[in-house]
Image (cartoon, rainbow, N blue to C red):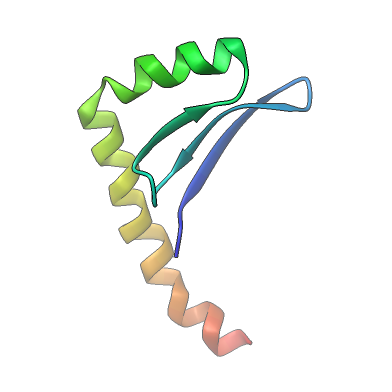
Length: 67
């Protein structure tokens, strides 16, 4: 299970958080700056990693039952 949070501007993906990497990855020049700033905030990264536990793991049983 992987939690992904992406940010787009003009239909182009700028930044993506991936729980498997545990950090932000930038794809454009502004996205690289955002990723660098957000990756330096360890409390924000911990919050996003915790969202995997609260959102994904709670809903995995529901999704498997529906399939």
